[in-house]
Amino acid sequence: MRGFAWLVGILLLALGQAKLEGQGTLQFNKALILTSDSGQKTVPANKVWKVESYSYNANLRYVAYANWGNVNWNSSNPNPCTGATSGTSNINYYSPSQCPQANANFFVNGNRISGTAFTSFPLWLPTGVVLEVFSNPCYNTVSFSVPANTPVRDDNTNAYLCGPINVTAGAVPNSPVVSILEFNIIP
Amino acid sequence: MKNWLYCLCILPLWGQAQGTLQFNQVLVFTAASGQQTVPANKVWKLESYSPSQARRYTNFGNYGTVGWSTSNPNPCTGATSGSTPLNYFDHSACPSANTALAINGQSVVPNSSQPIWIPASGTIEITANPCYSGASVNVGANTPVRDHTQNTYLCGPISINAGTVANSPVVTVIEFNILP
Image (cartoon, rainbow over all chains, first blue to last red):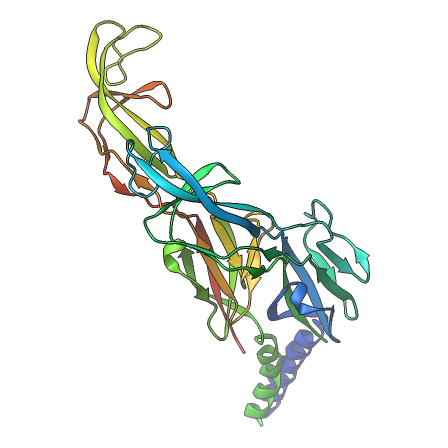
């Protein structure tokens, strides 16, 4: 009986060893978001990074806000706050434009790999690889507040919208967003 | 002795259980959700972003009498002859300007790339424009009506209430627990 227990024990040990021999498996460690605020990042020792996605920035910069004048509401252009198809409102307008995307880049070991399109995923990156996201500064030149239930004209899209809309002059976040999974390499 | 051997054997299995992701729940976010923050010891996987296709209705009234034919059959019976006095309605897309998806405060081009994995304390926020229907539309069952915007004839029932129209993109997220 004692001999049998030893035999079972050795068999179990062998199975455990088989598990240990499954070297080089990847174990989830954490998710990371990189933006241009992250600076230069290096894949740490004993880790591997999987770049899952690269989302382009969509932010707008607001450059004008002033009175637009009277707008007549009708069935093809209803009041955006009430749906009314008749009547007139004196409204303001704002002018936005896309924050500049030129020079928004994603570098791997100093190589620029994002261009007008970047759809080659995933990117598997080993220890020591250096990543960096760059973006252009972007600024709103006006501050304005459109109160709730107040129509306003979006001069960029020729659309009439309903407040509240609040914009503050100054820097606008303008970075691409890179999504990464970090794995431990289990020896 | 046997217990000691057993412990030796399962140690490697314990090691492998570390750092795995365990499904916790599915989340759906809209503009009404406000800013959402990934909880501690969780990770979110943003799987999809569906833009709003909401319509606002602007008119509902009498259109007059319509004659049915082979090229324009009665939508409720298929009849290709006869005529019916009916109503019409107009509609248009809810405005999408200023609709945005922000990840950690960065407004990104939706669907430019996915999935987006967001770690604990990361944020998601959707913004959308208010949208309003100015007309209520009530078409009875088996009653023809003209969709004036689409230049087509439909069959009731169709019920639209004037007032606020839900106009948000819909984002789906999977939340995982991080098992230590």
